[in-house]
Image (cartoon, rainbow, N blue to C red; front, side, top):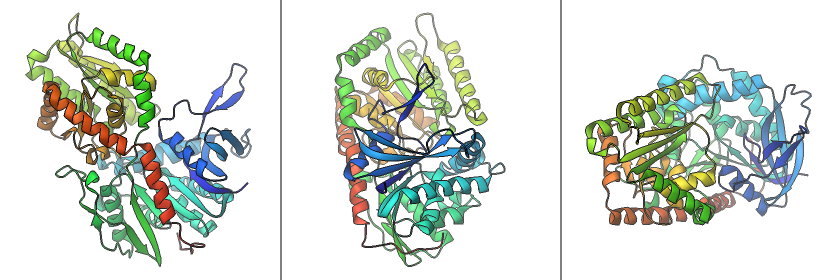
Length: 502
C-alpha cells in the first residue's frame, strides 16, 4: 500500500525483543520520550505511512526476515521497509564514514577527522538503497522526510527516481561553517543532493546560515534577503546566537526552504514521571544519602564532543582552589558509550575513568567520594529522580546540535529549584537564556560558572528555573511537531516537482 508520508531514518521505529525460545517480537517503544516516538506520531495525520530503516543481515541477498512489515500500534498503521545490510556495510557506512569522517567535521574537530578509510562507493550504495525503498513506498506527490547526515545522498537519488514527491530533510547535528564543511572531499555531491530537497531543516538559525554559506561557496545559489530571527532564538553575546537568517535558497530554477525548528522534549510525560510517588521517594532517598552535600549532575554520551574531560578538569580545580567545598559537594558523572567498537571513544572513556579516579584519590575520604562515575545506561524514570534531587545540572558539551538533557532537567523540576549550567556551544543555549551560560574552552569561565551555580541564592534559582520551564514548555516536542507540519504544508506546492541533476 502506497504511503502519503515516508520517514527515512536509520533506526527502526520499535524495539526488537527476543524471547526465551529465540522468537523475536516487535515491541512499541516503552517511553514516548525521544525522537522515534515523536516521528511516529506524524503517522496519525495520514491515511497510511511508511518508515525506512536498516536491519543487520548476515547475507543481505537472503536476510532471513521480511523486508517489509506492516505495523499497527497506538501511532497508527504504517509499513516498515527494513534494508538488509551486512556487518561490513554497517561498519563502513556508519562507524567509518559517518563517525570518523562526517561527525568530527560537523562538530568542528578537524584533528579527529579521518577519511583515509572511507569506502565512498559503499556509502553511495547504502544511500541508494534507502532512496529506492522510499521511492517504492511513496504515493504520488507524497512527502518523504529524511533524517540526519548519514543519509545525505538520499535526496539527490530520490529526486531522480521520483520527481513527483516532496522531499524534506532534518539535521539533528550542528551544521558547520564553510571553511570547516569544505574539508570533506565529497562536499559538492553532498550539498547538491541537499539542494534537491524542498525543505532543509535545522535546530537553530546559525546552522541554517552555515548551510546557506556552504551552498553559496560551491554553487550558483541565490540566498535572497535574510529575515530577523524570533527573539526567543536570540541570546545576544553567546557563541551560537544569530540575529538574521535566510529562509530560502534559489538554485537551478527551484526554491529550497530553510526551516529552523528546535526540537523539544515530551514535557507532559516527564512531569508525569516527576509527580510519581516512587520518583518523589527516590529523590528524597538520594538527598538523605547526600546529607549536607550539594549534588552536581552531569549526563551525556562518551564522546569527545561532550566535554567530559574538560568538565572533570574543572571539578578538580574547584576542589583544589576551594577547600571549603571538600566534603560538601559531589559530582555524579554519567558517561555512556554509544559506540563500544570505536577506538576513539574507548580512549575517551579510559581518560574519564583515570581522571575520576585521580580526583577521588586526591580528595576522597572514608565518608565522602567526590566523583561517582556511571558508565551504564540509566533508565529514564530513574534519571528523573536524579534530576529532581540534583542541585546543579552541569551540561557543557564542546559542540552539540541541541542537547535534550538540559531540557529534561528543567521539565522535571516541578519544585522550580535547581540550577542549569549550560555550554554556549549547545544549540539549546540560544533558547535557554536563563541558564548559567559557560564557555567549556575557558578554564576561568567553567570554574566561575559552577561556583556561581553552587552559591546561588534560592530566590534567583527559582526565578531562573521558572523562566527555563516556561521556555521548555513553550518549545516542547508537540510544538516542534506543529512547527514542522506547518512548514511542510507551506512548502507543499501544487503538482509535481521538476527534476534537477543530483
